[in-house]
Image 1: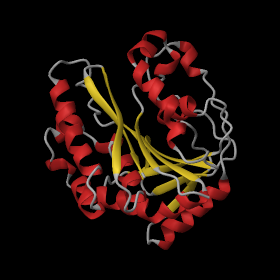
Image 2 (image 1 turned 45 degrees about the vertical axis):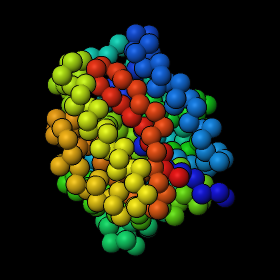
Image 3 (image 1 turned 135 degrees about the vertical axis):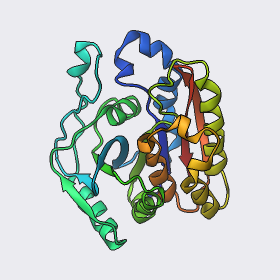
Image 4 (image 1 turned 90 degrees about the horizontal axis):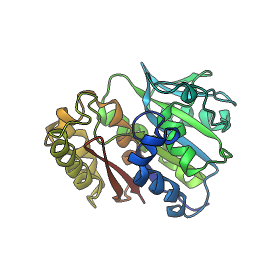
Length: 264
């Protein structure tokens, strides 16, 4: 197998591909997500997703062979609570992830019930609409230690050589009170500029140090009052090893910048 890159995707708000007005807003993101498979040297065997919508007291992997849907959004049209993305799980990969984390000295548990939240089925559904690729989920750890999430990425980096696509799914800006406010636009661009500088640094150690130090970036806590949607980037960057990141695209929706990156 050829080594696959790692991705960080800004997945947008709620089940937007399934709502006509939202599809117009996110037209650029939809097109770019649809093109992402072309960036890969070959089709992955399995996808490992770290989503900002699943956190636990310890790192946890999903082990269901048939993951359910998780409708973790509120106030959307009724039909969006009946969406299906019937990709299978892969318990064997979950076991491999758990073993790698434990070998790195990181506790890892299993969850047989965790399913696909919109941070998973939105980007993966646009990338692979046939849902023919197994997906395993890895949670964030609720302590929100950025360095520990980078260490998780480093622990699972070898999976890239086995046809596993590692995807961090979050947002470069995630302040629910800031969406659709004009004053949020410069905040989102200032903070994304810092992230882009960090991920594109040719020195992986410096990149990781900048990411760990994210709270001292311009407008950091205005962009992320809670860092749940930022930490998937730490895992993707850790798994990148020495591979330099680059911005794939940046979209502007709800008055804020939403950027996505590729490493390798």
